[in-house]
Image (tube, rainbow, N blue to C red; front, side, top):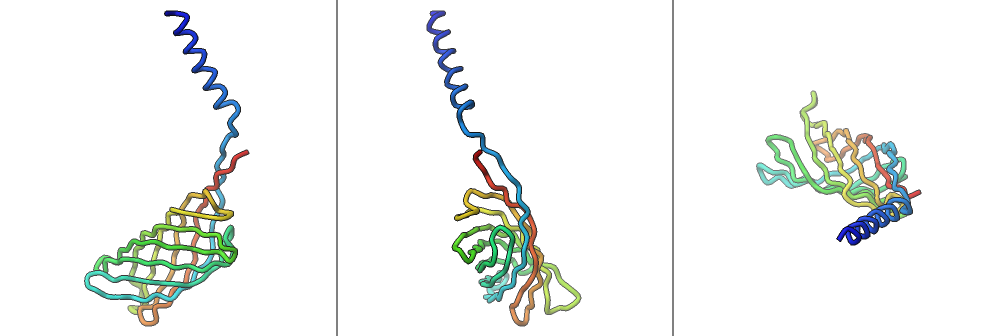
Length: 161
């Protein structure tokens, strides 16, 4: 029985060494992600909810010029919304995010300050495998539906050596 136990133990240790010793170590590299965004929003008010459908464009490092679409379901009394977004680079690379959005009143009653927190949920192309998050600060006109702002955060890229 001792010989069988030793043999099983040696086989387990050998397998562990082979897997950890020969596998290419994965590393994560944090990259700053920042840019600007401008879009046109269309709102469908169905109190107490506002459904926002938007499309626009922008420019960001690690993505270049891009188009963006997003949809938000906003609880109007609290100015709190959630929804998906998709950023598509000129070369077809894509970043999909889930947005948590919070609106704030400004001195101008026709303008809101919007803080969007984006969590990356999908990606393709040169950003394939990336994770991370970023925060957008933008102003939106309640009269025209136009919005513009900046964003900044981190993309974490998994690299294999």
